[in-house]
Length: 73
Image (cartoon, rainbow, N blue to C red; front, side, top):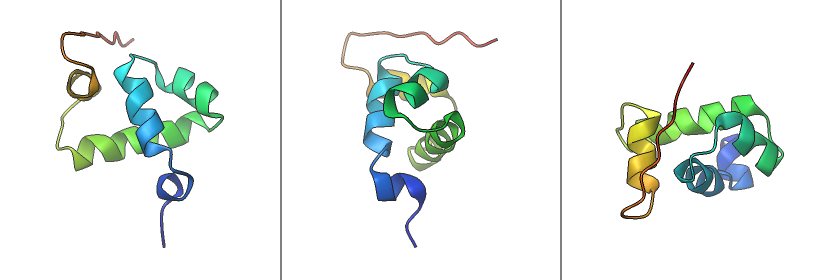
């Protein structure tokens, strides 16, 4: 059985929006999905790409020469 993000095709949009530096909440609002689903997809992307944190994913996903810093609370 396919998981939610495979069924709806949200992994790539989440990946692209994360590369723009959007927060989970902003991504969820843009895609009209729950923040929890975004968080689960982000966790899966980090695991699949063998990355340790969101900043590493953003650096990898961002176009060359573009830097983006995510500040956490």
